Each structure stands twice: as C-alpha cells, then as structure tokens.
Amino acid sequence: MISFLVSAFVLINLIFLLTLIFFAWFRGAPTVFTPQKAVKKMVKVAEINDGQIIYDLGSGDGRLLQEAARKRKALCIGYELFPLILIWSKLKTPFIKKRGRVKLIFGDFWTKNLNCANVIFCFLMPQFMNQLGNKFQKEAKTGAKLISYAFEIKNLKPKFVLKEKGIAPIFVYEKDMNNKNRIYQREGL
Image (cartoon, rainbow, N blue to C red; front, side, top):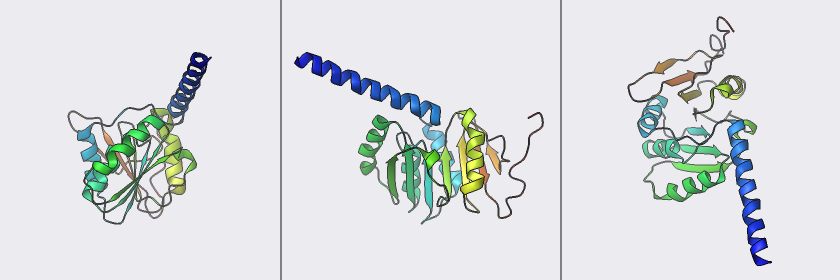
C-alpha cells in the first residue's frame, strides 16, 4: 500500500512538472540560459539608472536581473513559469552581491502589464516575438526599452542591433513619444 502511494505521488508530481514544462514552452520559451557574455552586454546597452524598474520575461535562473541589480539600485522583477528553475534562482539570489533589489515571481508574463517597466529583457521563441512587440507598443510607457536576445521583433523597428562575435544579436527597441516609426509592415509579410 505504501509503495503504491509513493508511486502515485511520484507520478502525479511528474505529470504536474511535465505539464508546467509544456505550458512554459508554449507560452514563451523552454529553459535556455542566456550566455553570461550576452547578459553583461544586454545590461550595458540597457543603460539602467538607479530607481528604474526592470522586467525579465522568462527570467530563468535570474542572471540578467542579478547582473542589473549588481550595477544599479533598480527594482528587478522576473517572471518565470518553470518552478524548479524559479526555486533555484530564489535560492541563489540572496548570495549575489547587489545594489538593487531582485524580485522573482512565479507567473505568466503575458497576463502582466508592462506599463511600470523602464527596461524589459527577453529571450523568447521567434514565434512569440511579434505578439510581444504588440504588447510592448500597447502597454509600455514612453521611453521604455525592450531588449531581446537572439530574436528580432519583426513588426518593430530596432533602435539598434548589437552584433558581436561569440553571442547572438541583441536587439534594442525603444518606445518613442509619438509611437511613430516603430511599428511597420516589413516587405513580403
């Protein structure tokens, strides 16, 4: 009887875990960590100031937020759907020397409003990038930056693209005051 209960408990937890992994995959991206070299470059191009609010959409182990918090007194908020990775990032964050505050949240960023963020980091699957671009244009405040690792948002025009050897491109988008010249239709689409 006890072995049956243990087996049932393990099976239920495995199904729960696989469901969360499946859900995370189809809501943004699987767990793939941004290389540390790219993390440093992304934080640098973000030009974060003290007092700003930083979001990481699919924060993984929290490395982008931790790097941002090392550099500035900013509130760094990460949304993550995979509970084991979130637990790991929550366990290691207190041991990182930082100036800012890191807050890690179990949640789906698609249901969160982006209107408080000054800088938004992401490393998502290409099929979600245009949807994120629309969300950014609709919800983000003027001057907010969206920094994407590896994948471009095809319905937004980047402010610039950083290309360096050894890492994927880093796309930097900024919401301007008039919302002009940012959303455009690419040829052939």
